[in-house]
Every structure is written in C-alpha cells, then in structure tokens.
Amino acid sequence: AIMKPALVRLDRLYADTSVAAETPHERWFHGTYSDSLSRAIDFLRSPPPDTSPEAAWQPLKDICKDLSRFLKPTTLKLQEVSPQLARAKHWTLSMPGLIRDTEEIVSIQSFEPSVAILPTKTKPKKIILVGSDDKRYAYLLKGREDLHLD
Image (cartoon, rainbow, N blue to C red; front, side, top):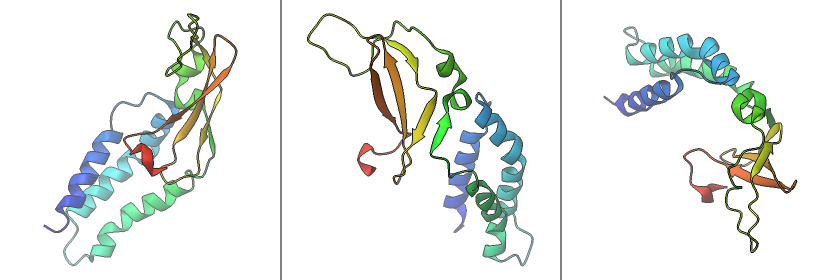
C-alpha cells in the first residue's frame, strides 16, 4: 500500500514513454530500455518474498545509473530530435511572438541545426529560428514545467 503512489506514477511515466517512437532518440530509448523498464516495474510491483525495499528498487536504480551516462550533453542535433523541423524550409507561418509596427510579416525560414540544453534546474531547450528577414530568433522550450522555475 505504501508503494502504490510510486507505482501509479511509474506506470504513467512508462505509458508516456511507450508511445510509438517518432525520432531517432525515441527509437534508441525504446530499443535500449523498454524491456528493462517493464521488468523493473514488474519486479517492484511484485517482488519475491523476503525482498527488502532497497532490493526491490535496485533494478530501477541500475537503469537510472545507466541513463545518467547519456544525460550530460549541452547540445542536441535537431535532426535527431525532430527530423521534420530540421528539414523544414520557407514556412508561411509567421514568427511566434514577433510584433512589428510595419505591415511586413516575418515568417519562419528555417531552424538552426543544433538545440542548446540550458544548465538550469529543468534543463529547458533553446532553439533558434531563422526569419525571412535573415535575423535569428531564440525561443525557450520547456515541457510541462512552470516557466518561473528557471
């Protein structure tokens, strides 16, 4: 009963990461960790008799330790994160958040080939869009976090 909240959260996270892979990073993660994560969660849910709580968590700790080797980059290649955005050129979509006094509309021409990972608490991503005016516009990308945490 004490483990139920943790198991509910783990099940949700596993479901979120088990959707069909779309990017090379997602395909790598699925191929490398999907089976191990499933077994580790099942082991935590139903450990053999006389298994200590620490031993029940050990398979997940091992996965975390292994994953930590890959969590140090400061940049990502846009091609690996989103091949569609990396290939996108000459959009008719106007530059987000850009308000000008003139009637000229600046549209998105392309995306810079790398994405910076900022070294703050929630590791937001900084992406650069190139406008039809040839200027570069930086945007901060965050997932489900409070914008004030960084």
